[in-house]
Image 1 (tube, chains in turn orange, cyan):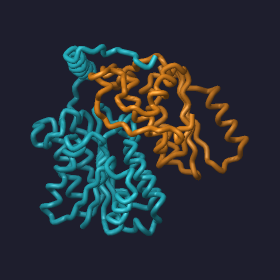
Image 2 (cartoon, chains in turn brown, red):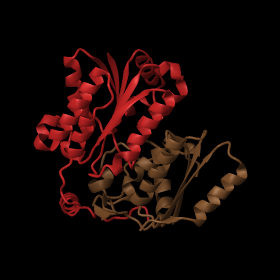
Image 3 (spheres, one colour):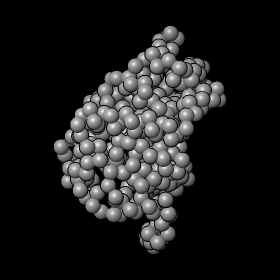
Length: 155
Length: 220
């Protein structure tokens, strides 16, 4: 799914999806088509150029709307409080980040963010792939294959 | 000294973000510091307003970001503005300018604000702004948009940390170790299982009051 082709508004933090109409986002835009896909597919892959080590704005606009996919209650996971997921999916999570050029700090930030995303969506397996846009195509391919074959157990 | 503050909450004016900002503003006014505030979600879509921010930044000395955590990082409108500033400026634009960040969320653990603070730092480094440090606070929904002083003991250490931050900004120094120490003391060491029970009771009673099924699955 190419997000820049979608009509998506930013999360207004209204809390409607929390205890007003649990699980339902009040904003009527293309997220209403994306939410059912998110909850029915077991493997979520984010692919994004890195913005300062995080997801770029196009992807972040979607990620900010994920409150509707979690319960407004809390559970303890890995010694931290989290909102439990409202749905069973995703079982697996992968984040692929593209850097303009080598940047160790941004790479580490992306790995951290990817892991946090995997924990908060309660994926059982996850991996992170980061490459530079000018990197050799064979190396990029190998990194992605490794990302699929060596997923970290999250539970 | 001229400070530009970028507030990233998308919820409006009665937020913990604004409460923290207002607390700092009081400090700054007393020291004759000019501060101009922008709410990211009000300006990110409007080309004229973005340009106005850029022009204000040109004449400023300091950029202060005050943001909640949305799903482990900064809210979308703030990311849009950061990308815009990165695209519209050269390192010479940021020469001698400094930056700090205040990041907050409901979750008690620091790790749940770490990525947001790292993104702020990476932004500063990439653009050539002098990164002066950032602090994070948990449990901030309790503030509920009220002045920090009205939250009593709960914001005692937060206020001390922000006081220190204010002193560091005025002195043109990096965020002091005292500020980090006070921020660490901010969240009371309540066992997580007690917090969990308290917050779940609140959500469940709110759902009962609204007559809704908390566990609904409308998108399946």
